[in-house]
Amino acid sequence: MRLLNVNIQRHVDRSRLVGELLFNDPVGRRELYIEVAREHETALDTSGTAFVIAALLPCMKLGEDLHAGVPHDEHLLRNLDELMRVYHMWYPDRLKPIGVHLSGRAMETGNTPPTGLGAFFSGGVDSMQLVSRLLATPAYNNRPVTLIPVHYDGARLSSAKTYDRVATTAQHIAIKIGGSVIPVTTNLVTALYRETVRWTEEGYGSAMAFVSHALSRHLSTSCIAASITYWEYWPNASSAFTDPLWSSSSLSLHTIGSELDRVGKLEEIKRNGHARWLDMAHVCNGLEPGKVPNCGVCEKCRRTIIAMEAAGVLEEARAAFPERATRDLCAVAKGITCKDTWMVDWYAHFALALRRRGETDLARIVEHRVKHYRPSLLKRLWHAASQTPAPQHSPQAQNAAL
Image 1: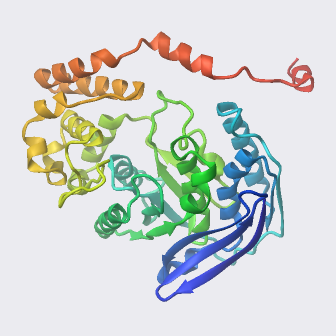
Image 2 (image 1 turned 120 degrees about the horizontal axis):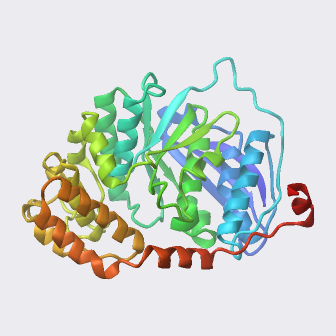
Image 3 (image 1 turned 90 degrees about the horizontal axis):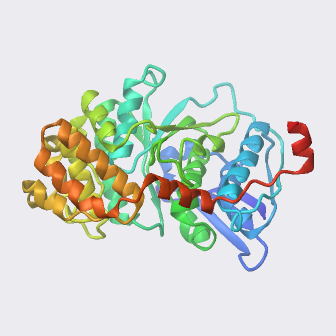
């Protein structure tokens, strides 16, 4: 793959950072873009690094080396090499290590390097906890936070209606905290990832890295809300293990909140004095939510309502759900379904938190609903081990280890 061209295109009140990529057949020539309001054009980085980030996993899938005339960055190259090792171990038959060749000169950053602090914002519990943590952490709280809602055109659960609602929520919170918002739209999924990258297993972490680097004329630090805990680690598109490896010498990516489960995140939001934000939370997997942000009946809504009650914040968040959904919590719990082992673990933690609050009847219903889904820990570990290939060591590496 070769990065042929990078430029900024202007459309009335919008600006697009556009990269032209040439893959071997059958993928061929592709045009990727990230679009922001004209007022945020100065944040767009034309070095091309963002498009190297976007193309890495597709190139691994296609088995093509990556060539780009972007600034040679040893820190980034080391990180990308490590990322390729990780993804190849996770998916040895799908993603193969490739050569990454950056041949451009180092860019001049000017007298004042960027200092912006960005936080990806999806409107859910994870991203609200991320913003709450940034405001409460001395290492971050002296820097205004830039919230970044992103519409990945074509991605599942990333409709234009949802994006508009999340962007509006981001604006409300930014006003409250004295921050700013850069709403972003990108065609990354429709133009490239849909054919080459699995979104949940591989894609959305690199997509956030792509957006971060595209905005690196403004950002020096980009923060991502943890979607899984340290205890739950499995191959995943975004984690505290892989997200920082998308960093370069001028932009650092951080994952925040991996040490907390969902109840712990909600408790932290309340402890930091930000529980009222939760009445604007958008967590719904329903495709057509009504006037309130969430349908209240899908699995994600039920899971969130139970977690909020377990954390003692449901009262502050009731406006985010239809009144009928929070009137009878036992009925909500009786509708719980688990499609994966991690859901069983989450609901088990919710039940423990409910018991600590003295809500034993609700806890019993939650436990009853998930008990038939619970595999033994040994079975889970054995399954995980059976899916992981034994590492292959070269004779040179074995000799070096000795």
